[in-house]
Amino acid sequence: MQENEKKKKKKNKIKHKDPTNPHFKPTSDVKGIRFGGQFVVKSFTVRRSSPLELLRLLAISPSHQSRSNGLPFPSTTMYLPTNFTILAHHAWHTLTLGLGTKKSKVALFVFETETMKAAVDRIWPVMIPLGDVNKKLIRGLSGCEMARFKFRKGCLTFYIYAVRRLGASAFPSADDLREVLESVVALKDFLDHTAMLALPSQKSITFQSAASMAK
Image 1: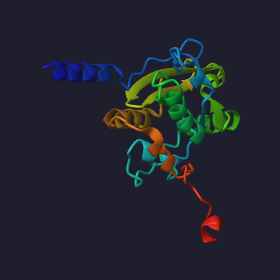
Image 2: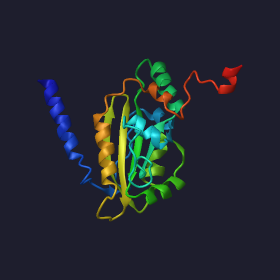
Image 3: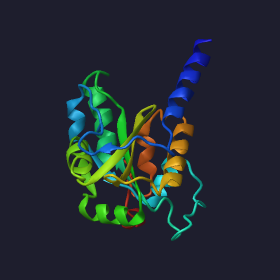
């Protein structure tokens, strides 16, 4: 009975996160990434992902193609934990005898247009400490407003932001936002995010270059 009630509450909570009518706030007022008492996590870094990594993390078929230019979710930018961050989380958890969190964070930004995404990508860093995301990415995007969505999926917490010009009356990328949200909701909990080391641009702990393997 308790499990059924929890599932109902979760479904009701998701219904309030309606991508067709997100609640936008100026970037100065929107909630950022939360760290609780785990201040050391602020120094851990995240990196901008590739479009295919976005599909893989959200368990979306690679055949997904945009109607515009063939790229998946052309208006979306995602920041993933770096190799260092994944390993640092496990080291911190061990050093603190289980008190340090092993949970990491993923930040997705769905912009109102591809043009806005391209302009922002030019000024946003490719890699950034988590502690700087709120100040440099969210608060630093003046003249815009955002709608925030948050989902906990096991050891990964997804922070999703819809971004548009301040005072805009619509959100042209609502379809992309809806698909991203539905995909995250459908994900099973991540029990161990070291599996992310296998993503295309990540190097696993046992990575060897082709040259060294040939010797």
